[in-house]
Length: 594
Image (cartoon, rainbow, N blue to C red; front, side, top):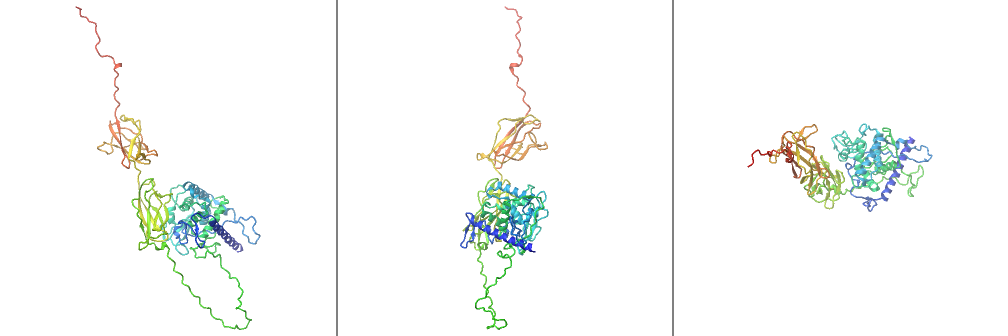
């Protein structure tokens, strides 16, 4: 019992120390957009979680987390009875597969978003407090947890209230959402933040490679530089909006930065304390348990001296005045809270966005604009609008993300970052919603069209001929351009047609071959390269002689006809100088002369 009590004291002391360090760091290294109000409270830019930020706007839904703190590596602990010893090496070690996932995610983020400066130790710190490094590294060879890691259902009973968003696919709960996997994503966040970290073609929140990469992208989704303390704090708070959570993650981050080591999978220490457990030894997060974040335990009133008017009476002697009942306390009615701008939003309106169309690979010329309005139609400023790319598309916002949050201006308008079309063509949707308020979303339809070319030219100069049953010696090569510039990745269709007047596929004459060697007279799915060039496969001929047309077309209207000839080789023309003379030879005269 004494050891348990000492452990709680130790954890409370470390938590207090870390909190003080974190506050000092914030004050000492504020980013340019971090200021303080008249009461000394920090005010930051739009992308900083606030106390009224809804739980659904975080990675975990502000789910409970583990409050275990790093071991005390004091070289000379005080010789006090019951002093806890530092935990064993497994406490500081990270299971091999889990550690590999963190480092691979860091490497990918260094390539994809170098300005974020994501350290793998931050992923390790979050993984520690979210799941105890996937429950001590209980994962298979592919990094998938052995058994799903599922947090409590977020039903509003001591936790946030988040109704089911995935039909129970990830968390097995069709009524409410639960945080899932080693990095504890709620399904609604995983829907857009999920990544395939191990290259198996799936985005699985229960796979540590997928979850670590998703967490890295989540922490880097804004233009945050995690080497800057203020941005680092913002990113952590966006993952789980609690000051105690921030302090706990920072303590593990500092611990892992000082050094760690790899341990075998499944041998890591399991976490003990959790933030929703009042006996865990760490302060519960506000907003989940209702506990006072400033309280570390039951308070004991300190004795005070009696005042001069409270003179003690002799034992057994009556007091000079009969006791009177104290006046009943006067209840002060709670002040009516002032509605926030978000509270006044009734609906969203399109702020003039039309014609969202772009060619594959291009940036959309128009940006999406949304206006937040009251029921009376008045503009509402300082409201966060979330824009989410939905549907089967690889289009993203600038920076490669499919979600962006923007604050409305004084005119109530929020303008989303520019959309960038991927290579996948077709229609998709961008949905605008109000962060922190349930009002109908506003959908914008966007379309990605094929790359186009307006001109096709042949790069060859030779006449393309072939004998019946033979093969053409030269291959067809063409170049595509658009307004004189190289047109790369443009789809080209090649068809051997009957004639210019009858442009249907021919059933005789030249042909291509498929993988099985069968005749093919229409080719699709071919694209020009970075130089706008495309070389077609070798052409063959059947036994039918004649002149044929190979027609090439592209999106955008470019057309090119190439003539092909199939004929027997012409008879060689004799050289008169080598042929014997057929003229009659001169014969000597036998006639007598006169």
